Length: 309
Image (cartoon, rainbow, N blue to C red; front, side):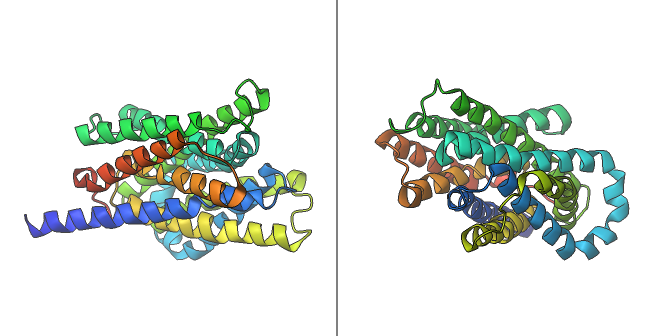
């Protein structure tokens, strides 16, 4: 194996680890949000993502200025990604509120690979995926279906309108996530550093999200519990998590990255059981194992790596 091939494989594996670690951090958001049940999910999503957007834009300001001309050359894509980013947290956190932490997270994240493949086939040069990708996709999809089907008897029934609306919002979140991830990867592939790409997207998204707190942010900081949850979510999973995710996107194609983020609902399910008290049946844990197989297959698929740094 040539030194270039070894380097590319090593970079891909570092990218995989980065995305898995980011997914671990994201998997804590549902459980964290459950401790601020007095707050609207719209307010939680708007503040966490909006505040993290301000922080990311500030941290990457020099890099954004350095790549400003390149970013402006993609201003239409940037605008679409900012809009998608602003929709994502509002749909995601409301989905968890209506359908439960486990199902809301699972639907949102599990639908993203479907939408990502559609975007890549429609707009990117990527028209074919490896057999290993399809096999891992089947394991991931099967695991997700088992996790959703394993919802305990005491949970909200499927004929409940709010529960079904939560699932629809989960699909909206998955689509918006796929859109801004795909655009971020495209910006990185055009030569823009990941920090500048994510910083500009999140900074623009913050401009759209933070004003909504005027209507949804009642009692936002009225006690220590709410304040600590919001600060944690803004700084750790949303800011740090996405900085790490941006690094991973340098070396991992977005279709593979979205499959790797299926680790997030696994983390969310475990935390929901251990901390929140939600119940998952044996079939649900079989689903977790199936998702684990999906992740292992993706981690071994070094041919899927991107080349940008």
